[in-house]
Length: 389
Ligand SMILES: Cc1cc2nc3c(=O)[nH]c(=O)nc-3n(C[C@H](O)[C@H](O)[C@H](O)COP(=O)(O)OP(=O)(O)OC[C@H]3O[C@@H](n4cnc5c(N)ncnc54)[C@H](O)[C@@H]3O)c2cc1C
Image (cartoon, rainbow, N blue to C red; front, side, top):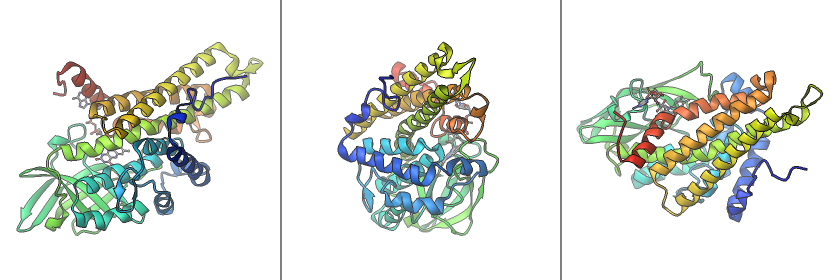
């Protein structure tokens, strides 16, 4: 009889408190009831049913769940991490929806917004009645957002925004866009409501990764905004970078779920599929893969738990987050790809989750700081030498 529980071999969830375990179970039940049977179809058709899911996710209290007040749940970082894990066990697109809304849209409004902006947007975003997006990346500026071209110029009391944002999750369905633009005082964040004259979006199709997620381009042509549209609490790149640090924490926890799903799928398959007269799991080469996947999974679970505890203690630093994203996304990709090999030809279909996750994880490896950029962050933090340029 196997003695290790493959889902949580070190029983790390026993470190969670009762509320955190309840959130874990609630999210897992939501995924089972509303997502699991449909997600492969959404991936195939390149759709995400935002209108249907957002209110349900909002009702569960998952949108901006680690923020306080204004309709937000005020949960711990550990609870947020576990929720991301259970969402991404289904699909990285689902977790991305929740990450973008909570960490990239609600967080900057909560941290840097005026009282009026918080009251206007946070309760609606928390309930899922409104959807938000975060526009930082541009066609010519990805890893180096400090070189952005989108500009905001003063015109009397108003601001005039011009530029293009690219690869924006939820971009074409968002009611509110947090757009980062260069001003003469430095980079500032602006709240741009859907329908503002001069603001248009176009959806990006033909993705082979994160297909169950809406990705769009934002076009801003002389968009006039009142002075009340700027986020008053922050100037400079630290504004968007602080949001990304929040969202990357969700990623490093979330990918543990994707890795776990792939591992469990391969483990199950290896005990039922027979070749050469015995189950695949009975071959040493398969066991080597399974044991390696189990080790990778446990490492990422430990890292996610420790970083959650540091975040709850207010001690999590951006370098920790880079270390965690770097390690856990790489581990998840390796597990997904090894799982794919165990499933053989079946592994390339959407009937099984492994290649869908492996493909999604290519986006997760790239967005919110690529593997190379996080390597450079860790490299700088251990040597004291910056190697970005
Ligand atoms: C599906 C999807 C959703 C996304 N959602 C959002 C969103 O909601 N909002 C948003 O603002 N952005 C979003 N992004 C954009 C994402 O954050 C960027 O793609 C990412 O920052 C990388 O930028 P880039 O694609 O322009 O690559 P580039 O910056 O052009 O990099 C290309 C390659 O060069 C490497 N490289 C760059 N600089 C260096 C260096 N100094 N040293 C070594 N190697 C280097 C990179 O690591 C990478 O491998 C999304 C992307 C995808 C694919």
